[in-house]
Image 1: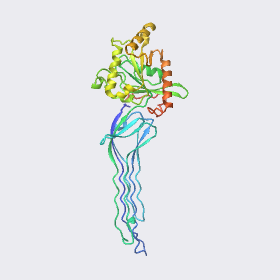
Image 2: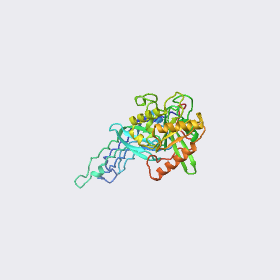
Image 3: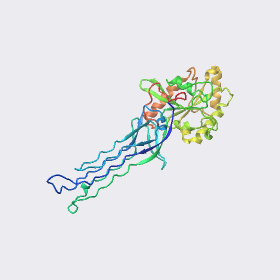
Image 4: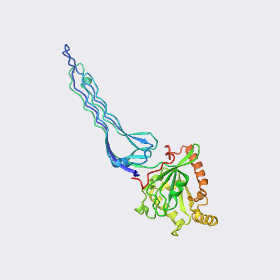
Length: 361
């Protein structure tokens, strides 16, 4: 299954049924009078958040959805049958925007929540409602009204407590494999992560949080270099960002310059990302001796003026320092939840669940 996080669909609610202009016709009742019933209401269209879905790929194959129209009213004051509502399942975390007005209709951040996106038409009125002492044989009735019809833009933003940010090959996928049951691709070349991956970190009974790994960024991402910045939106709901930095990059790149570059790309995309709690995680400490790794880490922290902020020295491959990081994250996430932080309110995916990667189709 491909990971698709954007789609456009056209939804049409059902029309209301027409009212009926009918007269009672029975033996021995020559003047039965009007008995036309009302038309049925048209079905409405709802979007329903489904925790079992994690991609919008279904909307690449079907783009138009229509609810059932109401039926016409009948004689003997019989109302027409109302049309069935249409419920369209979407992943939790889907933002719905009206294309014509560019207004956000809703944000489905809760599992099983429903959002009305197209209201069904009202049923027409039958002629029985027009009778009076001066109008004993009314032939008036009203037609049903048309249901709403609109084009919708769907954008999926994955729900995660912690987001991993960094250059290609900074070790984000290795870290998420170490701390969770997610199994993204890991290789010794850049851009092995092509789509976001989710992993659940379980600290203990009733203690867990969700980590999101997005493709790495390179200089010029805002202008379309590399994989661009399309996946940065998946970090906008997170509580904490972990900025992973390769302690000893093989190409000799300056880790400090890499951090500053990514900060500029984040500023260009959404300045609010820089206001989120962001921790510096110096990774791949296993490639250096313990003394060299500690010395190199402190040099980077000093150059970035990060001494008064959270920073960690870890090895995602061996697990050294990872437990301290995950325990600290659990404490911060639990505090945010207790304070009602609305960044994420949906149930996390089950153990081992991860977003589709580039190998699946």
